[in-house]
Length: 360
Length: 121
Image (cartoon, rainbow over all chains, first blue to last red; front, side, top):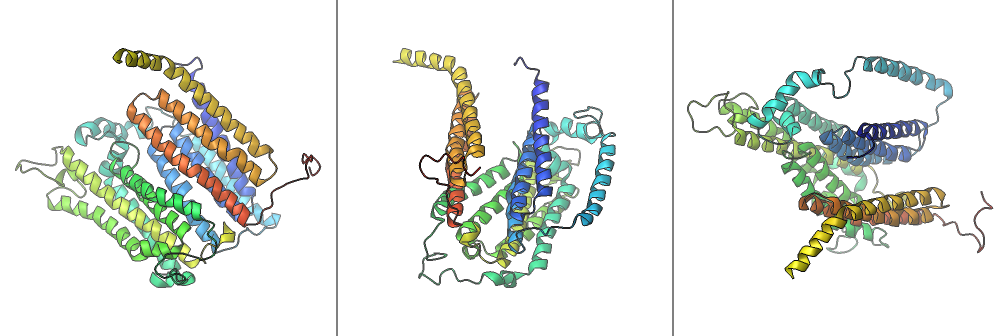
């Protein structure tokens, strides 16, 4: 198609993106302002997402952009509001220990890369054993275009159940550490509706965020619809429950950043977040038990909707039943991820004082 | 009428790819202009002025170029959605930055007339 050897273009993109990552990492290590560091980690995630796209890992890139650049930046900002804005300057001799650890770890990692197979090597472990089998059998057994979703949700359903449980446990742990229930919101007991009767106005002085609020009112519903699109389209294109849950959580977080945590808690109470997180894991595990009750193995989606055929057995592929099972467990993942992320955000934001105008 | 439409359509298919390519290049140049402004201008407001308009403009030009080059209508529709999102989000982000700088009491660098700002470098 082009006169330039396409390999050179790919190489240039890879080298540029990796060089950007390197410099951002150096900048993060050298900076002392925590705010700048948090922003740079967001930029780091976004650049890595671009690099994942460049190496054709679109689903991973999507997750990295949503979780790394989106939600974790906001969560880190929330955590930063609870602490100082700048890191303390350590004396030079105290940095020697971490430097030695970094050097040794880096040397070990570089030594390990010698044993790694080349990029795209057909004989590598990832491409030869079960990987090749999944690629061959997805079309017949599950019949969805996105093999990543087939592997993640169906062939590796146990692993994904574990990941969902880990996300839920993380949300639970943060809630337990930072306070549960009303106690976690001790710092923000500023009644939102005290000033004007019946009108939701967070502060009655001049509103600097009016443009942001108007645009957010337009964007937040679109963001939520997009989350559902990502979820239900996960079988066909990049995306799935994890990304959709993160995007849904981002919509709530955006609302609470612009309209105040109290208004957000009115719109989406903390108990909802915790309930849907638990319900998501329950739904995922429940699909497994449903398959068990229908005579299949745990999380064997062929038995989610078994046909009325007495000879129906584990060897028969039932793609429609697979689709239903995948949508259901992805729904569980969506609930678990969205609920956990929102309750983690509430746990941090509820402790910090309301974000004041001068902090913007 | 039908003949006219057909002629127009055939013209469209002829100019589609070159015009799309030119729009992509122009958009890229506009983005570079914005980046140069970001590096060269003295304070946050002028820097923002350089980047905000060029960012949205460059994105618009590039997306129109990509719509012209897109193989199917669905791709074009998705690009339109991306453009609508950018058209809402980009200026709002610039507004948020300028608003935050103003609220934080950041003074614009305004010298007396004729002063090119060389003195305080």
